[in-house]
Length: 113
Length: 116
Image 1: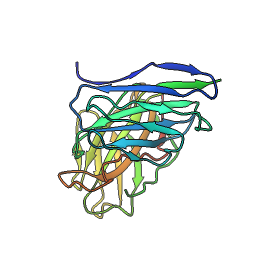
Image 2 (image 1 turned 60 degrees about the vertical axis):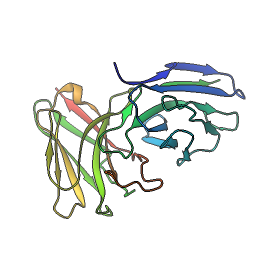
Image 3 (image 1 turned 45 degrees about the vertical axis):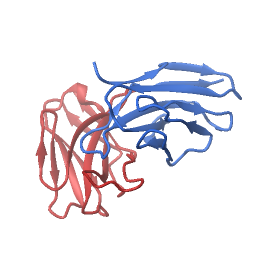
Image 4 (image 1 turned 30 degrees about the vertical axis):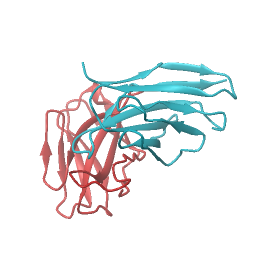
């Protein structure tokens, strides 16, 4: 079945370590997005990519990095420079231009201890 | 993208219609209104979108005012499973490709609680 997959669902890391969150889609979508959600808050845009080998910073890109080497994949690295990395991370994809809906993964809950 | 304003929370009785308002007074002519919802600890789910005409699908109806400065999402017969945070987003869509215009920006949303 077509969809967008994030892995793992739960992730624990020690403070100071970089960690990479996976996002894969088989919907043939051009655009992909990463969001961060904190308890009781809305979604905040970290990075987005409209096509392969291109990406733009969102509203809270500091401390994060991404790559878009393949259309299907948009991994997010949470670096040690991110001051408060513990959060719920959501990946999404859509057609470009966005005519209908964006599809979201089920999220990765990252806890840094 | 135009900013949206939604009430932080609403309650509705099970079986009644839930009407969720959204203000988007700075919306541009080529911006659509999208609605998503997020059930606790899951990814957001698309509900409906529209430009200026009212829209209806199997999940909901979207009523957009004539001046397009506000809209209302209607869940006609709310069930307990409709309890979620509902997000109203306005953004450019369609065949016009504008640098940076494809991003989706979410606000705080409305936490809808359906009561038995």
